[in-house]
Image (cartoon, rainbow, N blue to C red; front, side, top):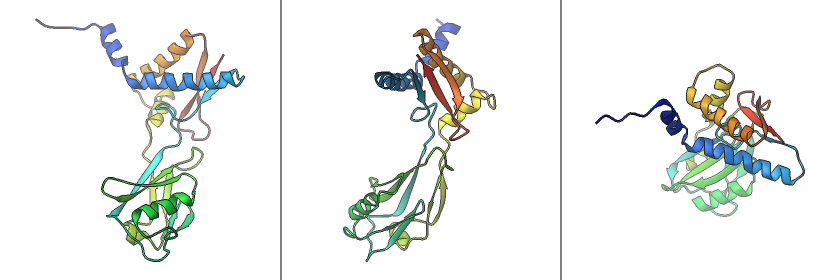
Length: 206
């Protein structure tokens, strides 16, 4: 026996994904917060699959369980961090980086005990981060240079919205989010996020 599904069933199956669910819930959470603060409009310009405007860049050192001698420097995002103030092992290096509180920079380690530097790029800047020629680079397995973020999916959604590319799935997902809120009585629109000019923001009024 051959099994068929019709157009409506196929479309329903395609829509049953977490992207729509997560997008709707993130927007609704912000609406509840804003309405509770006496606002009559909500803007969501970051933090969702369709609006992400502050992507993260991860740089991993090539040396496992690195140690340092003395007080060498790590230069990242234009800031110089002096290491060795709390110790010479990897945990101390991580602590020194995080204690420096460089905007957007967080240090951690992976399961192989390599240093991992995670940088959250600002929406209004180029999505990249530069490792300078610090004296700790060799010990940490880092190479001086600039690393660019991989474009998040939000850039693709914006491209579809503006007609630069075609993607029926993304078009349908955005339309489903719009339909959900319109059915609840909200006015919802998509505007260019002027901080990036390559992502959009949801604007919901009530």
